[in-house]
Image (cartoon, rainbow over all chains, first blue to last red; front, side):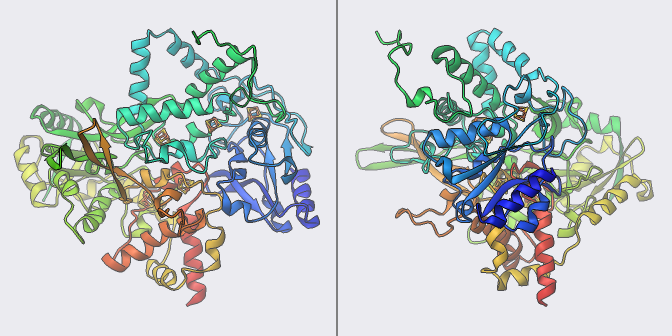
Length: 290
Length: 350
Ligand code: SF4
Ligand code: SF4
Ligand code: SF4
Ligand code: SF4
Ligand code: SF4
């Protein structure tokens, strides 16, 4: 952690960056912090409660962060996938951000979860994580901690849903969507939802009804999942932010699985590999075109 | 008028109310893949009630002002448009076991809904609902009801207030409708309970919340009136995503959007949906100009509305200290912290 504080301090003192986007201990759990003065680099922490994917703050929609000037950002391996996504999709130039990669031993479900990680408290995405050492990093800090414990609940639930007959599966999702109030927190916290004007906000014509009723909710969640297919960084921030507790991670994981099987593509922190939605390949499966 | 009611008496009462066809809304346990939580829900049996546990995750707002309400249906025939009401009459409902912060909110929002016009959608459900609160014994680090004029055992907004005691509850009938309810279901109540029997945990909870936050609301209000352009607003909203989860979870936020939804070429529905000042879209003009250009200015609006604009008009604040905005925030925004900063700045200025 000394390493992190010293580096942030140096970057700010040298004027390499104007702000370091990192984590601090907040009143209830770890939270994002925006360090602009070298002395405040002391606030920075990195531990298993650094749950948030800070890449969302790099998106163009965050004008109030961009105004602070060039930024450095603290990322875990999974977060680096989102930073790479922004670069891949021309939202950010690689040279416009200094990436501080942290070797990672996994994080908890919530930023206020104290204590060692257990299969109950560890975040779902950490199970079997292969990116605990971000490659997209200008500075790579820390020693590689042991691998996090495995949480199985998400996989079990996915398998359970896959076994359901279609009608039952539809009922499962209809019941989940029924809880949705359409606050759009799932969209706003998402680093990859960077459109200046979301299709959901278009009213002439209105593609997606904004009302939280069965029709509106189905079209929103369907569209959201489709628009994130092959782009989602699997940070689960949408699920964590949802005040109604919708299991949005399930949808995103399923989409990721389909994209992996159909297009042999997995979202990584290598921004030079184009995503299926941004590239055409002759051998892309197209048996549905008849 | 104070009665007492045993645990089994309360269960029998609830089941009788349900059997009579009245909707009963109470905290119940829900299992989600995100974990277990207590939520106000329409319950089908007293067995479903979960009167203690962590702070209830939703507020009562959805039951009085649903996230989406159809206002009327329209049909067009050539140049003529005909309208018909979209909803029937509000069903009689009883809320049982509500927290002080949630029922206080109902009275606070009443004032807005009866200010420049009388909001029928709100008052129709409001009047059909009898509110039985339960003095709170489960405050956490985000609660600050005592700092905004309420408290775990504050009766504001209750028709009947329950206070835990050994083996049951003290029941204080506080309004005419509360008294009428107690006499209608009189067989379940025993006469006068002794106030000294109340669970000491109620007092301890109050003391705990009091240590969470102490502020001078009057000083904050006058500071806000004079400091719309203060530099502290420049970075209040940095970590805020503008996601609106805080406003949707909040029992006192009440903004809405009106939409027309065609259901065919000639007919459709006008609906009223929840909305929030935390999103960019809330204030964007047709020209594309947005007077609240970033998240800092939107957070300022939220704080101003709750602690300056509403108080200016109605006296107290548009916040019951329930702490939900803190609990749901993915960005780690914390209203207690913001209020502390404002309180300190107000003190320094005076
Ligand atoms: S997914 Fe991997 S990189 Fe991300 S927090 Fe978990 S272990 Fe760390
Ligand atoms: S965050 Fe949850 S409640 Fe809000 S729109 Fe998304 S799914 Fe619906
Ligand atoms: S859709 Fe959800 S999991 Fe995927 S990048 Fe967005 S916030 Fe993260
Ligand atoms: S304060 Fe938190 S919950 Fe509210 S809009 Fe901002 S990020 Fe969302
Ligand atoms: S502003 Fe926050 S603490 Fe106040 S009533 Fe709303 S959700 Fe509760």
